[in-house]
Length: 465
Image 1: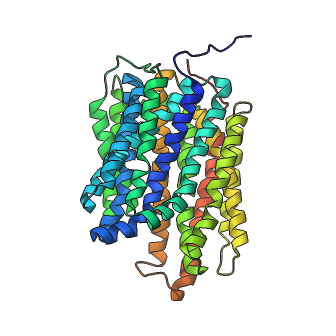
Image 2: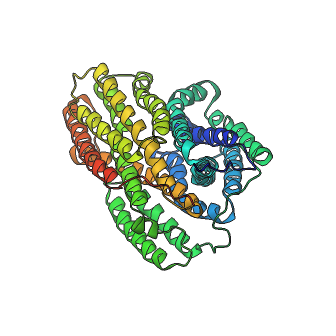
């Protein structure tokens, strides 16, 4: 029986802990700040459009830099990019905390998003490199659970910090984490992973990709406004041009042939995109429903909505270990089917729906999403050669961010068609409820199709040679 060679130069559990810490901090930075936006707007006298950029700058920057830094990590070293990413996030967090204007804060958030992309674009690749196949699913499960932990604590902890210590404390609290991870990486991780060392970096393709994805995602974020449609079309065209360029590049920043020739990689990523597109806006829609229709306070709504990420966190850890023993395709597809069921339940919401019904639906959704995510990520990361691990890790993140934008685009488009620009009041509650029904029906259909995308990937294979 062939035994797996134990890697030298690092302690795999130390690496797992480092990646877990960054996997908590990154979503925290993205979600906790949303709670503080009213306080920031008051201090800097910002309007609704400019305050929206506090959140959008981080999200867009992360999406724009993910793929280029993922490829750069394969060439110059994943540990190096991971290390620099932590240092940049720590520095940009300090700049955010010291911001004297809204413009300075937004600019600092752009830098923060770039550092986040460096961490997210390498974290999963490092885990895949450090852990043998027999333990990889478990490690990925812990990492995915850490993401959900960050999402779970963000609203509650963010609210406490903002209320008692001010919004700047949200950024100050993350600085020690980034510096600690960087220091431990320097001291404890002596091995570097750069299987694509010697390849030329694709600057032309990177520029086209960054411009196209920025225009496309920003266009999606402001749909269904006319300007959103105007931007989405050239953004989509830019992605097509990028694909054309990459198919002919000697050393592409994103190897499109992975999608053409690797069925597991292609359909696993498609399943991830569909999954996020069908689920990300759930908390947004339910938050409005609970506060406007049910009369819940923000705190009460937050307590109910925390159910889903908490269940995700528990199940993702379990499903990650399961994917080391069973075909991730079956686990992921089952998870997607369970999510579809939870979305169908939410499509029956009305003004008399009990909180217990909503919590039960969120438990179902959390179970399905936790069952889907870790095995699906394991499939993606295990299906490519070592020299493509950085690109694969970045692609997973890109599917997540793009899916999130699509999900919000669908929700806002439905609200705009049925309610328009009017505020949600008792007079239009029924229109609002009708909108939520349509949104969850659309998400249900999308997720149902995702089950077949997940199954279509074929049998799980490991190709990290």
